[in-house]
Length: 312
Image (cartoon, rainbow, N blue to C red):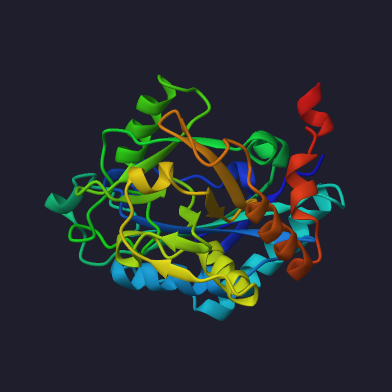
């Protein structure tokens, strides 16, 4: 089987050769920003939105991309075109953008920084394994709030998608001791709900959808799509601080996210949300989303099976 290709610092390389040296500042300092999109019918979905956010993240992090946005689009299209040839017709790809501040061979962080840095730019793809999220659609997610708190926006803007996620790693390990399948849902320093490590979080109550305030969360692309769908359905969408009390007393709760668009949350810290099952409003929105993109999103995940190479 031919190996997929990736993009690394100006060249297309075999995916196995897409590696960073140990002295790259993305490793030494965590000086890296990222973004992620998926394909639908093996075509990039909302690529402009994801790339524009990626470039805004780079600007905030003072990392100057070595190519402009249109060149990034061309790179992505080539990767998707070539790597889609290696998967089945009904499979999809995820595409990761990753930009670091560059290499520092002195390996001394800010104590020995070179005058000129050349940012490290990576793009790579991988097949989306929807069967890994099958239980999300069939039975819903249990969210648990771990002790580590979300980065305060006063320290690091929530608007950028970055790789400074040690607190999330620790939170994940803590939560897994409670429920191996639970998803950590992070509180801010005031006890307000923020987001998970891979999704936004909203609740549905009294006929309206409530999202945490945007200055406290990453403005998700899927969250924006959800807002558009709700407007078409004449369902109000508001932003305000919410706590676990509000989640427990909600009718439904959902996770907008890139891989499977919208997942239902049915428990928080062991307490059921609604009747403890994926709710009817969630399914209505997923069906509406499916009509928008011309693909059955529910079936794609809820009926997914492991590919043949993983069954062996």
